[in-house]
Image (cartoon, rainbow over all chains, first blue to last red; front, top):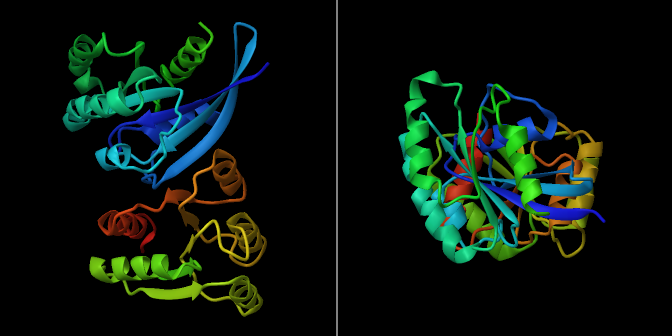
Length: 165
Length: 128
């Protein structure tokens, strides 16, 4: 039997949610930036431990307003990827805000943190700080670069695995 | 910017129009509104006009938004960004919208202020 799960990406604008989605979806990356408005959605099936898991990925417009609004983009999400950008301090500090919202509204969803843009070598020192602060709050933390294709597939596979553990 | 709005709800139309006027956007904005299936058919049967963005409801009384996008994408407006701006959020509908060539799928915010923010964002992304 095929399992179907709704996965949402959470985080500030420009942290790379769409790039992560595209990397997972079709292994592509574009240097040009186009802000997501509303939601983009795609489906991809992974085979994990001999079971097909269909991930419906909701790439949702970034920013605090969307997740705290009464709109239903995140409704019934089974999994949440929180995304921050190691070169963007605000995107890191804003994780606290997103975590607080999720605690009350989407507490039952599986939660993973993606520390994105690790190809920006000047900011690698932030990784340890983020990992130390958030290690207890997430089921897993992944260092990713959507640009270079690092860590993205692994994160989605881990998310899928978490549904059959 | 030449904006085509497909919407049959007068209140929603008013909100969009006021939001656009309140934003005091620098662009020269031309707005065409289609309120019914008949309006849509007449528009598509008329000579092609310049449209930069289409902002469309999903649930018009006479016709479903998915039927409308198919009509536009099969016709002379296939390259025009088609944005759904709607109150409904059903996974199948969002999937179908993108399969049929939608550029964005946006849920109508409840507050006027948030509507302004969305409209502003659309102009930022699609404005020339």
